[in-house]
Image (cartoon, rainbow, N blue to C red):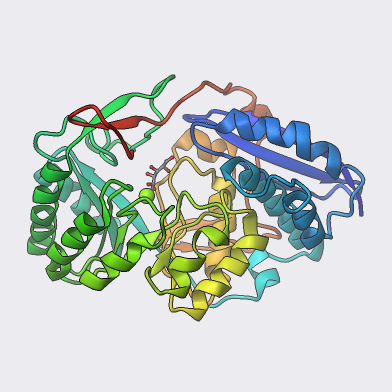
Length: 403
Ligand SMILES: O=C(O)[C@H](O)[C@@H](O)[C@H](O)[C@H](O)CO
Ligand SMILES: [Mg+2]
C-alpha cells in the first residue's frame, strides 16, 4: 500500500476547522484533525509546505516510522503547530490502518476497557442563578458531570460564559483579539459561592468541574483549592500556567481538590514532571494538539504509572474527527477519567458525518472500521475560512495577563 494523495481541507461550518485527508493507492483513505484555534492557517502552511510533499509514495502502514520522521526529522521539535500537523497525519494513518483491517479503531488499540465513556458538559451563566439553570438543563439531559462557569460581579466579560443563555461558548469571536479585563480578587471571592449554590441545589452526587483557565498564581490556586474542598469538585482545571510545572508542588501541598491540566500541552515532556511527582490527577492533552494517537498512548501509559487519568480536551474548536478518534481512545485506555463534550452545531455535524453517539451522559463508540468520522468535501467547500482570534486578557491596571 502507498500514499498516493494527501491534501488539506479548510472549512468553517460555524467555526474554522482544518482536516488532512490521506488517500492510498488501494483507495482506502483516512482523515485527521489539524485544528489549532486562532492559528489554523499556520498549521495549514506547515502541512502543505513541509509535510504533505514528504508523505507521497510512503507506506501508510508504517505509522511509527512516519511519526518519528515528522518529529525527529523536523529538527525544530515540539510546539503546537508542529504537533498538530503530526497529529493530523497520525490520526489519518490510524484511520487507514483500522479501515484496512476492517475494524473500529478501539479494537486496534487493544479492545474495549468500558462499554461507554462518561462525558462532562458545559454549564455557563452570566450570574449564579443563570448558571444553575444551565446545570439543571444538563442534569435533565442525563449528564453525570458538568463544568460550571459563571460571570463574576465587577468583571465585564469572563472566560467560559456564553454571550446569551443556552448559547454555545466560542472564544475565538473576533478578527483580531478582543481585550478582556480580569480581577483575581473578585474572582476568588466569588467562585466558592458558586459551588456552594451548586451543591445546595443539586446535592453531592453530580460531578462538578471548573476551569480557572491559567489565571492564578500557585498560592492563589492553593487558596481556591482549599476553599472549594467542601464542594468535592471532580477537578479544578488549568489553575496556573503550567510552563513552570514546579508551581503545582505548592498547590498540591495545600489542597486535596483534584487538579487537571494540559489542554495547551503538545508533548508528554510538557507533563512529565507533573505526572512523575503526582502533582496532578488528570491530563487534558488532546489527540490533535499532542501528536496524535501514537504519542498520546505513550503519555497515557506514563500517566497510568502515577495514578493520573485522562480527561481529553473536547471543545467545539476541536473537530468531530478529533472527538471521534478520542472516543475510540477513551473506550480503550485503561486509565480513563472523563471526556469533555461541547456539542458541535448542526452544520458542523453535517460536514463531518460520524457514528459516535451521545446517550444518557455518555458517549457510545461506533463500530464502523476506522475512527468512524468522515468529511463531506462538497459541503465543506461551501464554508470558507474566516480569521477568528482568541481574546487577550489584561489586569485592571492594564498588565497583559493570562487568558
Ligand atoms: O476547557 C476547555 O474546553 C478549554 O479551556 C477551552 O474553552 C479553550 O479555551 C478553547 O479550547 C481555546 O480554543
Ligand atoms: Mg480548559
